[in-house]
Image (cartoon, rainbow, N blue to C red):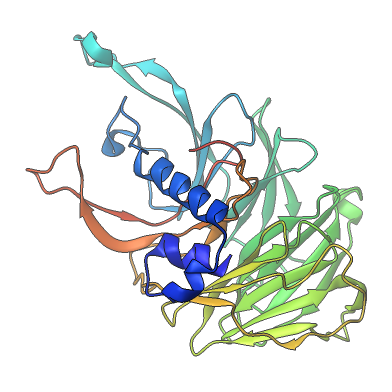
Length: 364
């Protein structure tokens, strides 16, 4: 996998090592490159015409439906926008309907939170339920058929406005929710319990803000956290208590780590402000024994990548393709390099990829 990542990124690599790979892998790699080179921008509207949220998008994702492309985006002031890719509304101010000139993108908006939507995800057992986390310290769930949002979590101390929630995750059974906050804590709650009597267990795992939280799809008891304290740590929930926290693996970078995300086979990709994407191969497995310690782990590959987003660009967080149809594990991440839009080369339109995602299945 390391050679594949280096080839895709087109960074220096060992040619002799690459030649040792099987011919079949190289053929598949070439096919993947061909498919990527043939990808084009959506043609019905220009990017500037597709405004999903009124403010800067902080997190973006696609509905898991295999038949209906729906793009969801959360912005910096708590708005959630939903774009029906193949839908449209008629533009009342546009008389010329030739070539779709009188049509506008079909976008639905909800005011979910009072501050930034930091992350959202769909229930793994009910795709009509969308869970959102926010810097307003709450987590809410939106019922898509009815458009009704209800509160799932709010801090016991409402005056604690510093416990900003940076990430939210669900175990594959859809019952147990985990979230991370700016205090360096991970919270755990059971969604089957009534909201008013629901118990939240808090685990202090880092001394500083946790920016990323990920659950290993192969074993729901294994999680990874990344922090402003420059570390990525892997934890076993079976061995955690509010008073005792012992990690099973640790990696320390030279600067803060924005995210660390698992894929299906136990690999991790970590995005760091030291301008690297660190890939750890086969860190854990589905039958990972409780209590086992891996100690300090080192990256299998480190890809040089500019992660200095600054004040006006959302933080980069590499994300794996959830279910790649060709079996190749791959991730996507924002890019600070600016390219001229192929649609308007004379106008010099510049674009920067910030929040990004890959559709669970397919080539979106």
